[in-house]
Image (cartoon, rainbow, N blue to C red; front, side, top):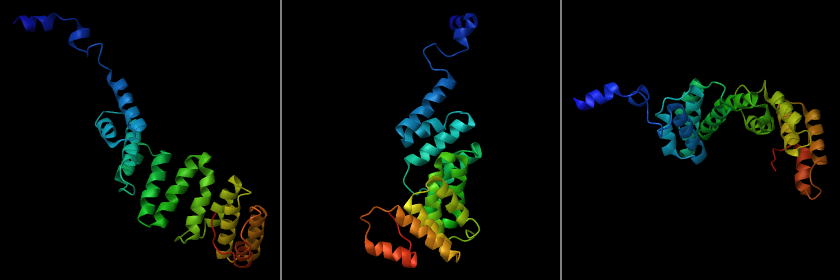
Length: 210
């Protein structure tokens, strides 16, 4: 009876709220999300995932939980993250990586492009998307040259970009334009480049890397 009377008579701030020393739910959620991101460990991310978080915070937790797991894991957590935050750049990028692990370039390429479109600072990565396209991609013929043009805008003097663009032009039967790209690439190559490589580029436009 005495205990019942105590709680009935207790001030609202004690009887109906957490003690002053306990973190408020919102603060606890922020701390949990921060621990997941900073530690990049699956266990703090799983703890954070169980909390009631705003959609974007929950998406971040799912993304970093995925990143803390094995490479090439199934992309289901990333699908959940994108439902919570459809504009999340990192989720698109990681999903593209996961799909590329399966060898499905056709499905990965649009996701890479979406990530770059959402974050213009990633425009230099158009060169990597272009190189994937050069390896073969169903339905890429209509966008491959545009992709290389965007890569060239970001790195106009990069021989890797110029050569990749040249190879894309060759596949489109634009031989004279391709040769012009290869020659421009050679202008920006180091002087110690191997002569056989130089000759092969000028003669055949073979794919090459740096």
